[in-house]
View (spheres, rainbow, N blue to C red):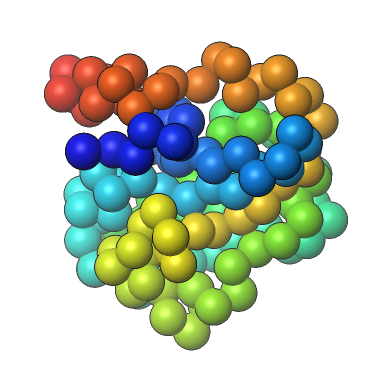
Length: 127
């Protein structure tokens, strides 16, 4: 149900490791489904320092506005600017074209503390 090559947070973000020090993240399929039709995405600028667990952006849907939480600490190296014009891509392809931010990790071993797909599925089932 949730891609096994990704890591996850309890706040419904997914993380894909691109290299030893760079990750890409976005919101999970569970999160986009709960939000409904996404109409606006606000993402941190390139060069911004983010801290794990802290708010780093916002997703607005027809139902509500939700914060995006940084899954790791580091520096933003890229953000998906296509989401400004087409935020609905997050609904259509949350693990692919709907990615949000790339981060150079300040603590590469932080990925070890994140959930695997089975752990995330269990978390969602208990919610």
